[in-house]
Image (cartoon, rainbow, N blue to C red):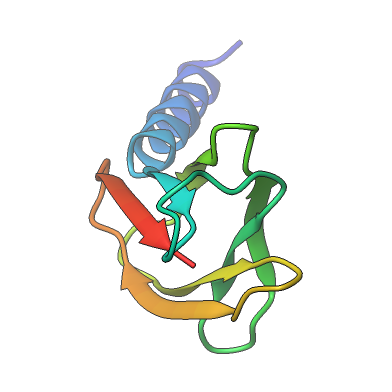
Length: 107
């Protein structure tokens, strides 16, 4: 391999590492607003705020806990929390690079 090929490969790996490091995380617990008990099987989604395309989603466990990783930094996103029998919660969020947001949500 030539010297240029090695340099190209090194630059590609470095760029990939930079993008991997700028991902953020959202963690939380979904609680009932009246009983304050955890709510299981709640859908928690992050979508692009401009066109509502899905970025990531999960479902809460039996303790109402969720975690979304690999979320884009410096991009306007929308958090959507929904479950049958509850009002849907929506909130705009912009993550900082490598940020971990830990929130509780009352439905």
